[in-house]
Length: 220
Image (cartoon, rainbow, N blue to C red; front, side, top):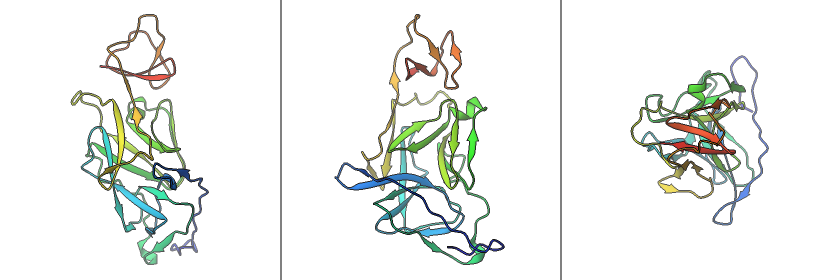
């Protein structure tokens, strides 16, 4: 329990189910964004998004202390308690954007559940991590309370769209979080039914990502 000014204290708990990783350890990966600073432990490690992340890789660096309001990726080995840090006046009323929204990638968090459903251009730039996978928002995105998502800059045409987006932790690629794979194709067959990422039928797909036969297809 952490004493938040004017609120008498708050607590945070979350039920997780660790999965077996590549090194035969049981770990769970998820996102988090809390209004209070927390410390990493041997069982619970926090990672913040690196501004040096490339177009096809999301790089995260571990931190000993996750500052208040900072969205992050976490790795948990089967439970453990959060260690809250700081004084009453270090409560962060609004989540911060990390590293910043002018980088190729940025991470944003929410203290309350938030839905993204109507802005098609924004949805195409939103990604999240769920069930050990990097995923791309399609028709909508629901961000749970005290969780975070990843946003990319609008695509300018350069460099070419990647065939995958992978995760790198402390300089090493991880296989514990499955990459997001795009299926590159020169075009879509004329008799195929294609939908955009908002679920709308597209008669003549141009450059971009579409849903064909339940799979994402990249049209160069």
